[in-house]
Image (cartoon, rainbow, N blue to C red; front, side, top):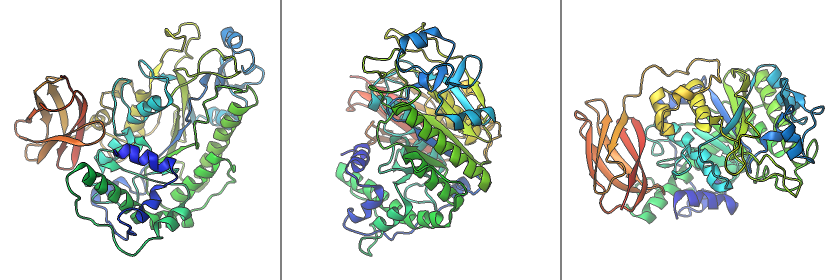
Length: 520
């Protein structure tokens, strides 16, 4: 079983990561780990926090940001369209769904950005494939086993997971870890539904420690090592998470909805001093998959948008009251939008482009991009792209998280810096964005390759450098050293199956990534 399937199955069967100490070698983990200077700097109390809210199922962007002056919107949606008189004004041409008063107020205050027409070239309309694309930050025809946030965090945390920081790098409020938080060595975050439940589950086994030595270098051995890392991190973090939750406070009344409850936990952890940089939240299922009885001003979709707006409004008010709004920003995302025309079930089917929202004190509010045309459509009748979703990821990495441009390029596998939107009105966080990272994969050739490949890199001349090639399941298939002086590595790829592979350059504490295609 590969790591990704293991993590997903754990969530589907109700096994939170916190339960793993009871099932790995029948041991309860009491292992302690200590961070190093680089990780401590990464997780310093002054660092900025990103809260990601996944609107799983494919949010109907047309009924969220309503094109109130386009007649075709109303003729194509005779039963579910939002009347112009009901929409909350954005500008002369657009209005919010009436359930989103909180978002309207944030937009009017300049702390909410609307990014129009976000998707990617050749969009996939499958929930699962579309979600994977957004989480891995890849093109539609590229399959990856690591997430964009996982790649970002592991680059900044050398030695992870062998050396664990005092606080988790990322937290998902839920039952299983997202693909977006998977790095090349496994999960770079932890997942739980409730801090107290997390603590109780971790502390139900024996008093023995998790074996810390390497497992055998076999598929089964690598999976055992991976499970040990997950279990060990759960054990290490259970106490600090509970302490933060117990110490934390809230200053506002949160809605009792699913998202409201989860954002309340995030507030408590931030208030309690937890130094995690990334929080990921979503609803329990594909709630936004509104094929039937979607509703218009009222109904299923309206209730979801109200839940989102009220929960985010409470959270940001809480952050402001506690003085954390200077370092907290959030973003929504969904795997796709919906069709322009409503269907025969008074709902909408899978589409392509849709708006996403970025919010926070240091967000440059406003509408980015013209509303996608409802007449100039693709060959399936869906809206065309205004912005590639990785343009927004680049903005988050460069402007909010303070990543150097080379690091952002490595995380996103391509250079999107020139297309980054000016979403944030702050300078970088403790990172010199003008100074490139000291390592990079400059070329791989031939690519596609058949038998041998030459990899050229930039690394410090006295560094210890190496190349690791992994398949899309995360298994290591080739390794080779790099001559740091020449920056050259030659590798034999005969025997590898046809497909796409992730090439990772490691030089001291830095890493860079690229893709290699093998053909037969």
